[in-house]
Image (cartoon, rainbow, N blue to C red; front, side):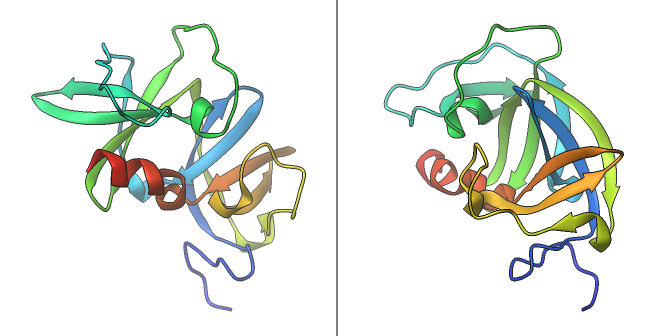
Length: 157
């Protein structure tokens, strides 16, 4: 098998990922999809938006929708803290922000350090999971950000 950044049929991926925490779980998204990481800004709610879309921000004159990964994954709300950030990612329709509890690190995964997600037992819908990353004694859920944002980005377009 040749190296690629995604291999949905086997669940084995290689590449560099930005890892972040939401609750007790650590997730990762491909670094090349990340535009920037910013501290929390004032978020303006948009009436009629989906529950996971917490609103929009003004980022240097550009309006960017922001979704809550906690809400998207069915996790309870948490108290705001200084480590909360917005990760701005590139999507088919443009940029979108994802609100997370904290950024962890940039990590590189080899094919040997990843495997297909289990059919059950994760707190998230496994259709959003590219693979499970295993390194440094930790498990990280490597997300397919396009699938995570699928319904939300269509609603905000």
